Length: 98
Image (cartoon, rainbow, N blue to C red; front, side):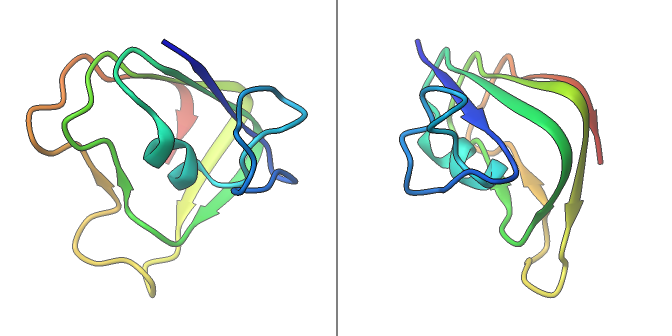
């Protein structure tokens, strides 16, 4: 069980385990999440160029801190912007706008 942090000026190479070493994209946070993790997203506008996937992961909370707007650049995406495939269960989304 871990916390993963995302800020607009973060870096996806970071571990994302604190606000000061946060990831830049929500997609990177989704990719590094494991069962029972929480993803905290700092307020702001995020433009994602990859599908947000929580495939087969369980009990994940995604929580916006402040006003979080998630936009998708569909020129880079396939059929889905958000994917919860392969029996993902108990995914909680709070304080997010799509």
